[in-house]
Image (tube, rainbow, N blue to C red; front, side):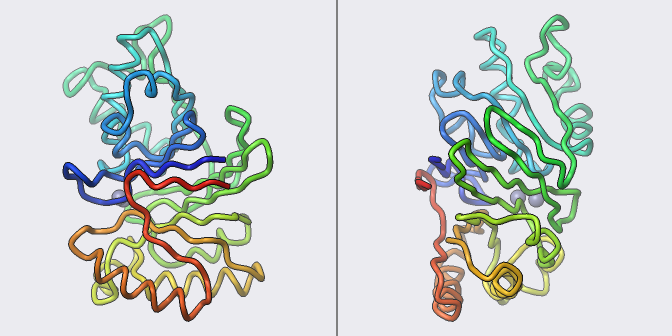
Length: 255
Ligand SMILES: [Zn+2]
Ligand SMILES: [Zn+2]
């Protein structure tokens, strides 16, 4: 399994992109910095997109991708919840912001939207996909992805503390999760996001339950706090004696 981090931040600039992961060049999780990171031929190779929730920084490039596909007579499968479908249908693909690619062209709509449910496994393009539940300001799911050769990555989605419930369902080799802010913002992000200290508590719970810790990769950092986050995470990694790294645009993980 090859995982490319296309977007690792909650902000966008020339050098930073919104959250987006690409697995083996065909499977996408969250579509922040998607089309802005891929050539047109690479966009046409995509087979499926898993969306965690409807926040703008996670769905931003879906309309742009839909137009690329439309112009090349291609289609795409998107997987997510009813809440995400409703947000896309009501606010983006409503024939006012953009054409309704969820239903058009009528004979063969560009976007084939598939509903998933937490803890109901789906077989998608040869991968076994387990949606999980996150703790966020809108309904949010994570995804454990198991490749045909048994490699396992788990991405939590945007989440605050309280992942203990989903830890029992997952056994990843690599855990991709978020740390949005540094510890001094703990109070203001609780219920929506993680800080290094909040992540530490989640990882301690994971280790107690599962008896090991996976390699941890962080995304969704606020760029203005990244130096602080990096320093605080180094302390957490040392305390837990575990690899925890901050992702960056262009980072590749090989499992
Ligand atoms: Zn969010
Ligand atoms: Zn976000």
